[in-house]
Length: 380
Image (tube, rainbow, N blue to C red; front, side, top):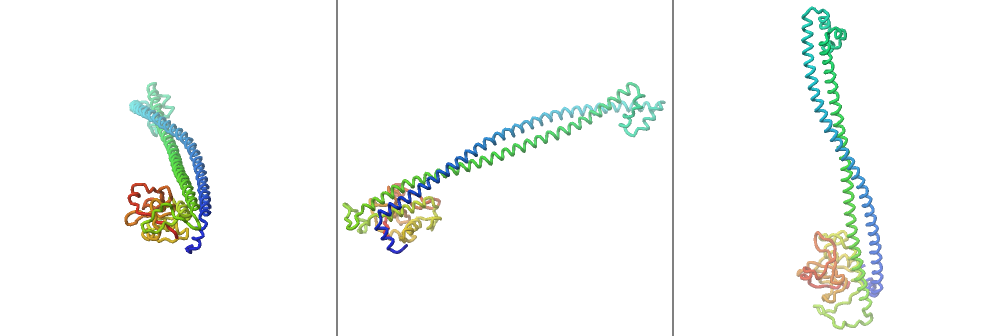
């Protein structure tokens, strides 16, 4: 690709090559734009479906929150009941203590007296509860004694019942709260996950829309630049070129070679690298620095340039500002520290600096206008 014959062949068929390049580039960009539009449509449909699912999850969360609130209300009610049961329990224990004291007094009196039957049931009882359960003794007690024993029995039953109820209600209330809290956490986790998914989809859509806009902009610029280059190449006289009516000679005094399809092809190749990150010392589609980009682009056309702005400045033919054509190398900074490829309409493509990507800038921007040093036309 470094031999001169292919390059001469490209120059001789300049208008045809330019037309073919223009058609191929537009077809490629059009296909890319269509594919990008399809991706955006698919992502938007996916995002819409995710939004619908999220609304369903919101409904589930509402139910979970309601259940959680209901469980807490139940717990509050149970706590009130527990406090009430505790008060009743205290009262029942107090009644039991009083009844036992009265019964003990009666029994002691009977035991100290002459009632042998009372003495027998006292001596035969194994426990206080056993004493209460002896029916034959209850049948022989006086009316007052029977009333006291009845109060003791009722009090004991109340104590046991309230204690059992207290335990059951506490267990039930705590279980309800745990279940409701777990359901609410599950609903919140599902919603958080779905929201993250939707946020990611929206970010992808934004990125795809931006990429599509960039592709459309590149297509417009590519169409204009390629058409201009083709028209310029077709308008050049072939056998005996005549000088321009009012040529502007470059500083060296050498004539400026006419623009050709090579420059237009260089522009199209460089356009394909838009968005590639800047990499110091980079000279491949995985990353470029400024002179690495220009070197790589022209290498695709069989033209060798050094990976050094100073060398590239010396290797081309000087071009006055008013004769710039697509493909010309434009240089900046007094020490020729930066280079880009002119694409037409006062714009150029370049790899600016660390943290940026290959992009299009305007020669009229303040910094580039102030730092502009000149241009060179690459002739192979």
